Structure formats: structure tokens, C-alpha cells
Image (cartoon, rainbow, N blue to C red; front, side):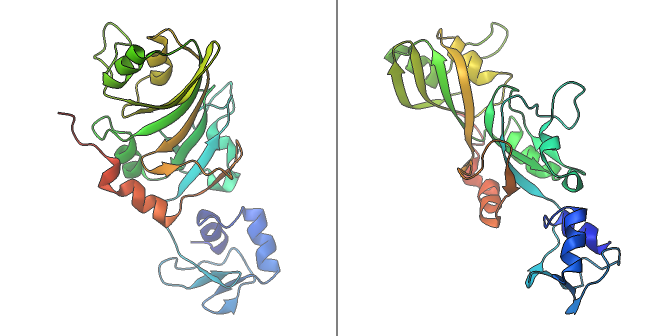
Length: 245
């Protein structure tokens, strides 16, 4: 693998940035300062360092994105900007979103090159918890909250939704705010659940998937790599409810 390709795939910058770093003598290969980004290295055996820190090759890449409104969860779209286009061009190869968020919904989204990781989090059989903050026109009383939490009909040809959790409910005149945690990923599910109790969602933001929350330092459109701790947490069985009895 080319040295510059290795450094971009491990998240250390774009090809043009890597070229500058190499010129500044910030990259070493087996202890020697690199002078050419096109040199081929063995990513599994050679010791590559950037700014005096060893760079380890990762077979797959994992990112956390603060998805902004107006951007679609797709790798290609003929009309709208995609989440993939928010990433540097050299990072886009092989990358795809894990699950979906509606175009007008913002918040936590993972992107990866790892199909197994995506399946683990988004398979209907896994029931991974996803928490959303919502603002909706309408109101929620105790009975309606119980209906949402125990399972509610959102379409005549669909089964009831699985048990959900509502928290931090606030009522402000004709606007209700709160957090809804679900374990499914049906089409427009949060909006449809609230619509079933006459609440029209006007703002929706995903806060967490499993036990990993959106990094508050990321403004809409920004991303970062998932940490080893976050990856370990997402692969932990505590994130998954295998069956509802």
C-alpha cells in the first residue's frame, strides 16, 4: 500500500495534507523520515509514525457524524447533499451510513466500511436502543404516554410498536418536548408514533445509539473517528435485547 494512502485511510488527513506533512518531516517509516508519499509500505509489518505517534492500520473505519438537517443518508443522490459528501474526498471510499435519519432530522449517525458492524446495530433482530429528542405540536397526557411506552398502532397493516421509553417530558403551551427511546427502525417511526397521539413533530434529533451518545463538541456537519472504548461499548451485548417476551 502507498504510504499516503495508508495515512489517509487511518484518518490522518487528505492526500494533499499528507503531502505537506511529509515535506515537513512529520512522517517516519521504520524510524527513517519519509520523503515520498508514493513509496509502498507493508501496512501490517512496517512501523509508521506521524508526529512521533505510531499509526496502526485498521481494516475498517468507524466515524461518528453530527448529521445536519437537509442532508440525506445515502452514498449518492441526484438532488440533495449526502452525508458522504460531508467527509473529505480521500475518506469517502467504501464508507456508508449505518441506518438512516430522515432528511429533516439531525443528530447522531455512524458511518463505516464494516458491514458486520452495521448489521449488528441495525438488524431488526438486535433491538438496539436509539434515543431521540423531539419537539412536537400538541400535548401528552398520562394515558397517551402509556400507549406510546407499551406499544402503539402506527398503521393498520403493521404490528404494534415494541415497548418504548419516554423521559424528560415538558409541556409548553401547545408544544411538547421530551426524549423517546425505541428499539426498532421503522420508516419515520418516531414521527408516526407521536402522530398516533395527535402530536406533530417539528424538530427531531437523535441523541444516542446503544450506550454511545452524540459528542456535544461536534457541530452539525462535523465528524470524528469512534474511539476504541466506544467501539467496544457498541459491540457489548448490553446494547442488545435479543428477544422481547
